[in-house]
Amino acid sequence: MKKLYKFLLNKLPRPLLIRLSYPFKKLAPLLYKGNNVECPVCGKSYSKFLSYGAQNRDNVLCPGDLTLERHRLMWLYLRDFSDFFTADHLKVLHIAPEQCFHKKFQGQKNLDYLTADLVSPIADLHFDLHSIPLEDNRFDVVFCNHVMEHVDDPIQCMKELYRVMKPGGWAIMQVPQDIKRTETFEDKNITSPEDREKYYWQKDHLRLFGLDYPHWLEKAGFRSEVFDKEAKIGEEKINRYRLMKGEILYIFHKD
Image (spheres, one colour):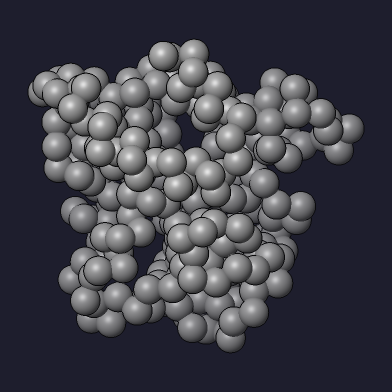
């Protein structure tokens, strides 16, 4: 079963995985009843989470809503340390919308919520992030997670997101980040799926960001802020929610 699960995750195209996830979410929670871990997004506890990723990370994927460590960290920030759920009439652009957030954000009365992606079947709009067909200074909040490692020109995409954000707006744009690497690694000669998975952690990645990731956003105009999850959330909840040790959450601002 584990081998089949890993095979399907690695081989099936993303739009098909999204469609198959709906029946999966109905069955999986029944198999993982317990109270060892908890997902703050769906609010339920389980015996454990599922494994996930090319490195087959153990105990990370919530069987109820398919959140990963990064989703649970982002949710905690939004819920407990921002006005995302309480501010009046926020205009939000969500690039590559995550299923675990999509319906929740869509149902929020205080949000004017727009989603976009190149191919996702759950997105409202479909376009190339290098040239966003939307007007300047439109959005209060932008989410664009695990996208910049896929695009040809991340600085151009970041500039486009900066352009459509209002002054005073903020964004969360998470990426896979190697915190042991000072500088982002990118080599145009690495083209095979096998080599990309070896060097960039996934076969469809074009680079592996290092600790210099915020500097890329700063080149596009953003100001970066680090959310200190260890100080704000605490070790007990970090373990309970199975957050990733060492993961850095950045909040990017347009001043």
